[in-house]
Length: 154
Image: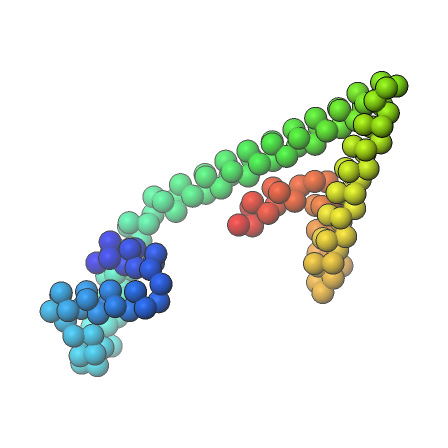
């Protein structure tokens, strides 16, 4: 039953409906009769049994998902901050070389425009929210932490 239910989560609505009918037919139960003839206590007992079995099967994957989330957020945090630092180091290097002044100006303009666009987008997407939410989202965008926060949200 649990394997069937987990497999159904990956199906679309019509496929789930048809698979449910097939399961009832294979188990010798008629879906309409089970729903109509079972008492509320019997339905409740069946639901409790299914939920208990699902909880046992899903306990470890859910526990591991927290660690995976933390690992994913940390990796993205490190990658995005290392990228920012290397970009800033390249700007410093370009600024120190007279023949690379054009590269400094171009790179600084690109980074500045990216920052401005992120801040404007964060402000625009959060204008309907409270002032503290707008300030928080703008600060997240200004500190280049948007990839990390986005990863954590999803």
